[in-house]
Image (cartoon, rainbow, N blue to C red; front, side, top):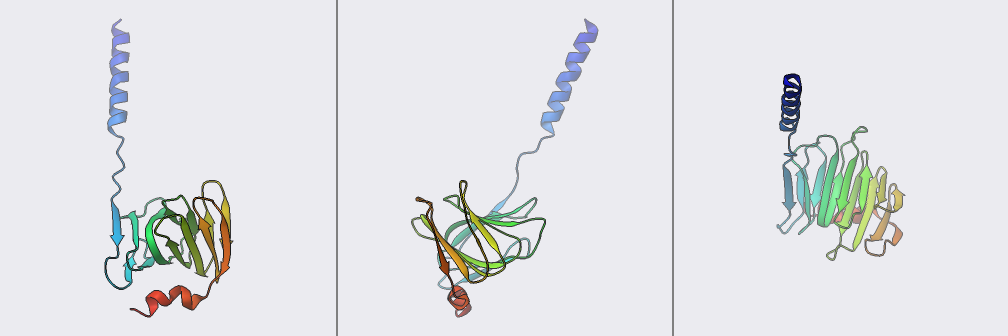
Length: 171
């Protein structure tokens, strides 16, 4: 009996000690909203940078750990992504559309109703997908507009000057 009690006590201590060492997710997130009247440049933790158009907003972790993931909350954002083959860079919208890259420059815009998302590539290669469908793999001067509600994707040809003119002419 004493041996059984000692095993029970040791087992309880082990379980309690194991659970007490588990740490909660303490990731701190930064939300950026451009409330100014001109585009705003932000440098991300991995040295990628983004240009937020007026009223655009994003959310990202203070430090990128296992992945590099950003939430596009609203508006138009130009991404210039630092290359890191071991950690793909992902932008996710509220509607679940996900754009994944290794190192590139692209613009992503989420409409006011969050139903339309437009992705345009300046250089490099990106994949645009949601939970059910891989919509496109895009390269230079290619784009796609995706309706988050109907899941319909329309391919478009984009102009690099048009893609960057909204922030390049105002800074």
